[in-house]
Structure formats: structure tokens, C-alpha cells
Image (cartoon, rainbow, N blue to C red; front, side, top):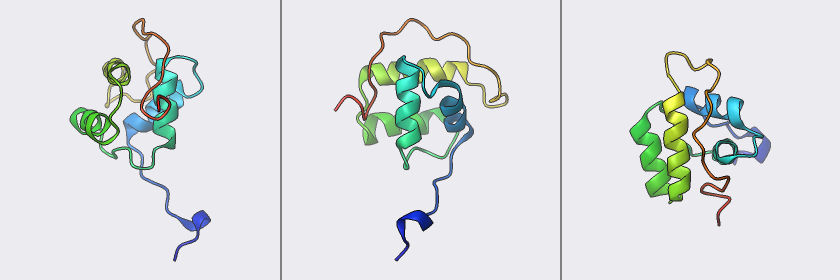
Length: 102
């Protein structure tokens, strides 16, 4: 049996790393999404819009607001240039994503 400290860390996609790097700690919807993504060991490893969208909708039963934030953040994300600074998010009401709303 593997002890807690010895467990293997999950692999992270470039999209995951980019969102956490750019938005974690922000007091806005993108910050909420980044917070939830950073804590989720099962977040998809693929840089694939459909895989992430399906995961949020069907596995996490994310709120519509969370889905809207994901879509807005994905539009800013460009896989060939994940080191690019994020543009301004569209005006979205601060709120919670999948783990913070329950």
C-alpha cells in the first residue's frame, strides 16, 4: 500500500497549468475555476476542449456559470502559445464553480 506522501501526482495538461498559473488567487470567476482545477486530481490530462467540457458537465455537474467561465477562458487559451498572458475576461459575475457551489 502506497503511503499518502508517496502517491504519484496527476499529470497536468498545458491548459490546466496555464489556467492555474494565470488565475489562481484572483477574486473572480476565473480564479474560482483555477482554484477548483488546482484541487482536482481527476481533471483531464488532454488539451482538448471537448474532453474538458464533457468532464465539467458530466463528471462534475458544473454550474452553467462555471461552463461559461470555462468557455471564456478557453477562448483566451491558445495551445501553441500557452505562455501568453491572458486577455481580459468578459464581464462575468463573481461566483463559484463546481466544488465551491455545494
